[in-house]
Image (cartoon, rainbow, N blue to C red; front, side, top):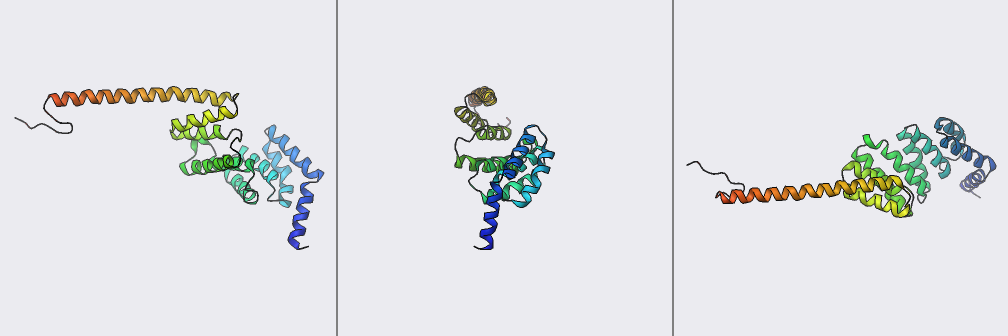
Length: 210
């Protein structure tokens, strides 16, 4: 057995140990109680031994996100996702870390978050909450039709998602109003063109003084 095999075997043994499960469960409990600092303190010794472990990274990344330490969360989750590229929760947490606060996120952060969310959907098209979060990003970008489609898909996955239903209905109203304003604008432009034609001037031309 090589040194690498021995290291992997040791990691697997630790990953199935009672202490491993106890620490993970305790950190999850602390996160549910909104105590991310304590969760990090519990997880750090375990993460030092198992830096690429996906379950540890998910909880550690979640704690760092709660503390708004976006860059550290990205570092933790990126390392784990490289080792476990088919783990959906790693991708959704990484997306949240890339995005940071939606209201202050820039185009690059939003693009990275969208890519990570889409990777999660590629793994599992019915991943909970992903379409909802994509809908929020597209809404922030002003892409109302795309945003509405995401909220619709979120409701197909979870018909009881009241937040998705709220935004889908609100955006539907905004899209109807936007289309009405476009029709009014085209109608007014058409009437203006007709008046200019009646005066003997083509659109875009000025008259010469007599």
